[in-house]
Length: 374
Image (tube, rainbow, N blue to C red; front, side):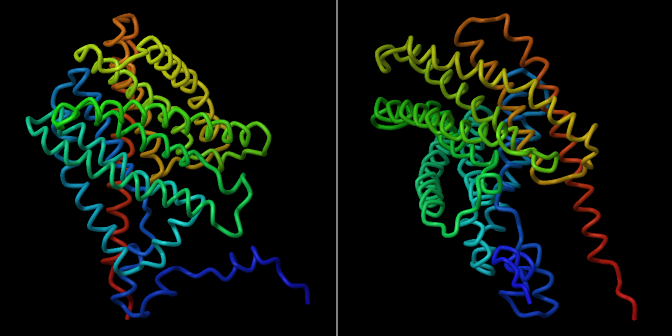
């Protein structure tokens, strides 16, 4: 009898986490969703928050406050779910953290905290709350980022690049730059704002370095490995979103330097880097649109709700916000038609994803309450 390869044996014998970790009773069955809850669902807060910020920047009435209120409910609920998963199914959570495919999505917790803090700073007078959210995000970043790199380095065996690397790896850049974006907003509340500003500058440069490394690997995969429609999932929109938030971080640093002369040096270098990042984000948009159209219209991949679509909404909102901020700091008013159009594109994408979420939730609820036959 020919033995199956080890990888195939692992796949064929894999059981749901609920069967491996808990008692097989009715109560445990009801918690099956918790065992397999996607750790990247904080992308919902990221997408909702940045569309709110974009709508605020572009003066779209009503939208910023509604989305902010939704985030104020969703953010703590997601933390409650995460802690419940840690307590009830710690092995499943640790397995996800050690996964090359899923591990990067834990960094959505950092970015979501930063985006929520930006909402608080822009839409409320409570800057102190935004400062505490920034400090919490910094702590999360240290724990999750170093934990991620350590887990990926020590993993054995490692998957091939075509299975282990995806757009979600660019959340390393997104989480890093989110600290810079919020940090420049709350720096003046600290005893030594110049230290915080220097830290934000370092985060800006560090995020740019991460982007250069990971986008090179992603382009290598795209250009030299077979890419099917099923592989080109929505998280690849982070190819654009990561460099868009880097643009926003650079624009915020430039705005801070304008109001605090002498705090940051080499401004021409900072301005040149930010222009390059904006150009890169803009370059990605037509390519990603073409790939998305090909995936669904040509290859007929079903357009049904998936939590990964929030990773598509976030870059659209981020590109809107970043372009508006960059146009403001540079005085390039000719760029403003772009965010004025994209804010509606981002809002439409958010509404479509949210509608899909409601339909999926309603369907799941009906399935759970359906009476069993006697």
